[in-house]
Length: 53
Image 1 (cartoon, rainbow, N blue to C red):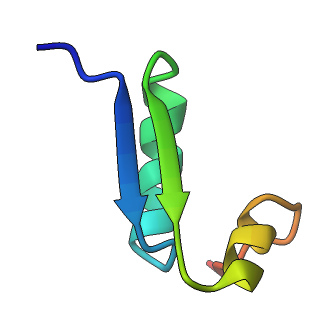
Image 2: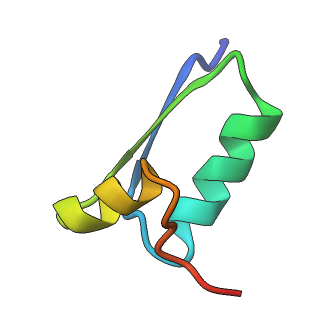
């Protein structure tokens, strides 16, 4: 079985960074992140990330 798609529910402090690293390391897998906060999704799609180090 070959995994070609992954969906992560939650783009918060765990889901967002985890899925971004998975997307970077596995470019052949389509990774989708969903969250009920449209503002948070918009931040992940912009230059202003919703996490601070």
